[in-house]
Length: 434
Image (cartoon, rainbow, N blue to C red; front, top):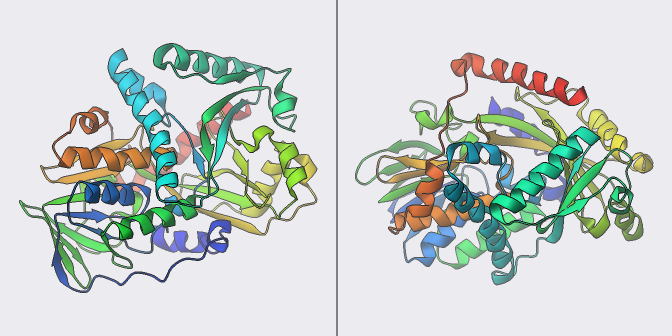
């Protein structure tokens, strides 16, 4: 069901329309072996493969579709320091460990930038990210959060007062904000395809159109696809909400599925408007995200469009009149764009956890998993791959730090957890409106 809904959402993606994909890699059709098998050719899986290969391991990557087909190739393109819920981390860790966890996300941004440079990935990276508040009360909360970030973690952002806000964004919707010069935005599919090219150049074997249907656990796990298998010493599961989507009989990792939920998120792109007009909308061409629970986010593109995202679906059903409703949300922010058409509208499913914290860990001694990025994974996925490579190589301290984050399954069981989540999100949407 999830895959059929997803397929329709990929048909009108600006990202897909603005890249030239290489020919798909061959599907796995043999029984092969490797030191490590990575499941999933998104940001996390490709990052793990790149780091593991650099440590001398032989690595195979199995991808059910093509590299970047899932959330890695269809997200908002915002690369941001921090977690989707920093409060969840702080609530479980002491001050020192919370600082260490935060520093991992700072390093994640540095790693993303260094990979772009090292592998010459043309992905349109632009530094600069703004958090914006829609009213005075939320502005106070944003200012307090920024002060806490500076005090607890030594991470500085630039406060934007209500009086200065018009100089930063040509919209009357927002009261005040905060500017982060280290975070930024990019074309996520170009970045993902660039990572895949770097992984292949390093000597990693990538097999596309090779969905995993079973993981036979043991001292040497056996990873099965419909036409082949990989015998290995370690497994890295980086398939997120798609991990069990292709298994008809035996779930790949049933204990993981109940800890994450697929949430649909949607984006539209305007037609090009010219550089001068695009520059006038957002100072420094930064990425922007409001602080509502059900939030809007937007950014300019290299060819002078506005990408606008924000409407979400917690039921996995595409919203009715998606383009019309997204257009209205955009015009609520930028009414001056009413003359522009929306030639592109697409979406996809991200994986969220109950507390919005990342969910990393092990199943036994030799199966690692990376999931639960909760819409905040463009930068953090890179570090996830690095941390799992460190752990497999015997330096597990940083991986184990994030693996300590406790997670609870979504309530309601397999049949009722989606309706329960929908009701919960309606409550938060009402809070935003009020």
